[in-house]
Amino acid sequence: MRLIQDLDDLSEAERGGAIAIGNFDGVHRGHANIIARLLARAKDVGGPSVVFTFDPHPVRLLRPDEVPPPLTWTDRKAELLSDLGVDAMVAYPTDTALLQLSADAFFDRIVGEMLSARAIVEGPNFFFGHDRQGDVSRLAQLAEAASISLDIVEAATVGETLAGENSSQADLLRSEPLDAAVADQVVSSSLIRRLIADGDVGTAGRLLTQPYRIRGMVTHGAGRGAEIGFPTANLEAIDTLLPGEGVYAGRGRTNGESWVAAINIGANPTFGEAHLKVEIHLVGCRKQLYGQPLEIDFLARLRDVQQFGSVDELVAQLNEDVQAACRIASE
Image 1 (cartoon, helix red, strand yellow):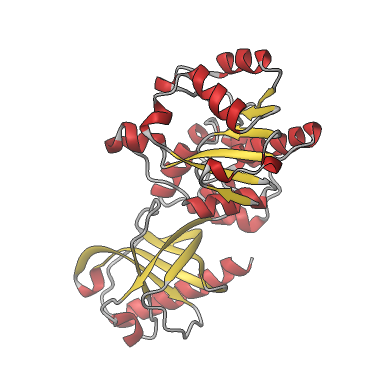
Image 2 (cartoon, one colour):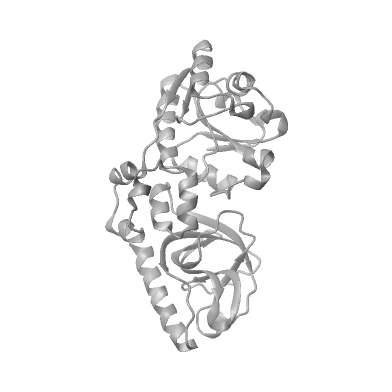
């Protein structure tokens, strides 16, 4: 899979195939349905499968105060799409010139001139062009006039998606009980953001194609964790959505190595600290990670952040948290 951030770098081998246009933030199961159809259409037309995304999200330029927190960074999105079999991802550098294009001009320039597409695959809520003036009806008209095949992949609800998955008992245990109102909702990036913000990383992970991941830089903390036998990596400069406060089971990854992780997001009330921190205990890790990037996969929420009456009580609970994290990460 090739990540293309300048359309001048687009080779002839990456033109003339099937394309899907959108943000694909998080790369969830609804996106996976679109990609499955995209791969089929690419095979039909004998060309590449290409996903065209925007970097940054158009809302960041149009309404910066309303921009949603991203679920993925560009390289991670490309990695997830590659795992689904996509040949190339274009991360188009969004600018005002692109956002001012009419729907017809966008179609002519991007779909026709730049990508020479022979097939298009989209979801039912696809909009394009200035002020989102183009919808799937207009897209169908333009595609027909250009002799380009068009597939609209119907959205699936959460209930339908989870009912059709091949889940293990471990997956079910990691998730919160599914609310009936959530079950009727369409699988979307905005819904997954709400689940993650609420701490339900288990259900979010089942709706994503892989567990939810954040990244940041390891910085120095107070060092209390090491003093009580649980050294932690303090994570800062996180550029994606942070799960809600709580203690989580997960995995930490850096430089090709991986460890089970017990993660604390929140304050440290036992030691009188009120400011939010992201602290990760990497089970068995003895490496010096200060100043290095660290990626964290979230598997399940274990409990609320709480204040303990003594350090001994805290240590006892941390032992339970680590045991639970090891059990969940091995399932």
